Length: 400
Image 1 (tube, rainbow, N blue to C red):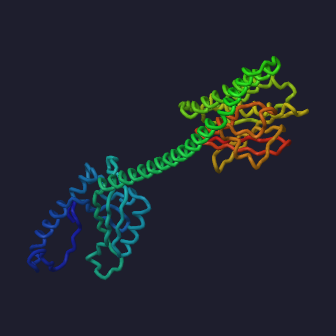
Image 2 (cartoon, rainbow, N blue to C red):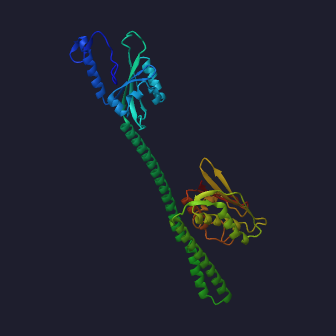
Image 3 (tube, rainbow, N blue to C red):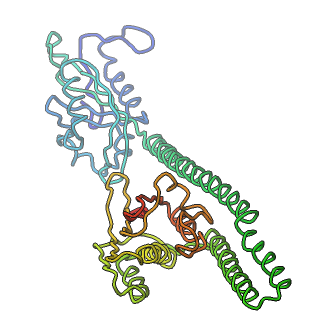
């Protein structure tokens, strides 16, 4: 065997690669010729014995594997460089069948490389009838650039798929927001043409009556109605403005401890209802705009105080419930107040929609619409349940 070349079979005569049979005296030339071709190959060509020990490696293969001194590698356990995939291919080739695989194996200097590897049995010329090969020839082709390009392409495809999914979700959210905005615009248009005109008509009608009457008591009553209508109109216009701002202002999202917000709201509102039993369960920390979420809690708790004021034993309970599958928190504000007819519950979160007469409970009908808008901008939903005279529960969800 040549120093770093391939072990060649020896026989009495050997066929010439170009012209046919040649005498035995030319075998040395033939070996030099094959060794030269062997060393010129850009592939890493090796011979390993049946135990996986390295017997030879061509010169360009040594360069590809960054072998500085082949004598250090000769006889080394070549299989130790590889993982399970090589062991399977080696077993197949050792049994007499060529095998191929693509795998990762760094150079002797530790540089990462990917290789297309072919293993084929190299029978022992001294035992031509032997069933098991004596050696294996192993041809490794450096495909690192191809594998890196493939991995880069796969990463790019995955990134594009993620971006498409993100954009699709963003478009879905935009569509939902546009649908909600259209609904809100329709509600505002309806409110402007109906609800806001009601106090205006009162103002005009009773102003005319006050001008015409000479009865002082009637004039004072008419002026009182005018004042009340003006206050209601002002409140409704202010509600529309707050509703509009809630849809335009940028959200300053950060981790928000709802316990802290609830404490602030309770400290502000509870003195107005000293007989109220106000309880709370532990609340979570969620991502959101602190001011916006505080306004939600304030509106819902203020409503609960308003609708329980006629109860002999008013109570209010705030609680949180986690949904691990939906990855959301649901916040409930429950009271034992006037309640409402559940058949009309779907109207509660619309602008200027009220289920109780103004003489019973004051209000402009903008608070719950504002709650819905803010919660929707946070990626959540709103819901209300209740029974007349049995209280109500107003709920909103927020992503965890």
